[in-house]
Image (cartoon, rainbow, N blue to C red):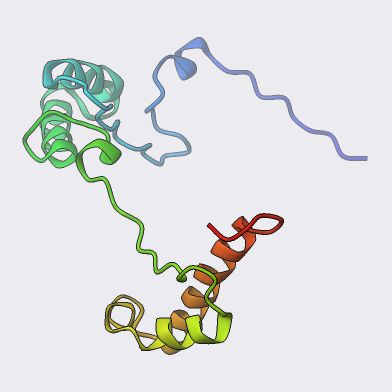
Length: 140
């Protein structure tokens, strides 16, 4: 038989989410989207002050704010740095063999997907995405 020892927690252990756990420091808080500097600094210091002390906690939190926002107001990545997905769609009613040949030899695709195997997988998935979206329908 195996007996498990039940651990009791002190209320102090659950008050701060960034206290040491098994002598390992937990992560520094991150800036939330649209969080003002003063709000973040206050929240951050209160979370880590027991672990680092007032002076060091303040320095860490200011550095974290600068790192997360690069000197500005925090915003969501999708708003500020919206990435456009790289696609290479097949032409209307294009056969797979002609599409694969056109996609594999396209200069932009070669630059974006320099490895031949990765490029072949990319081209195949681009064709399949278009094909699967048109099953049971006429080609768009």
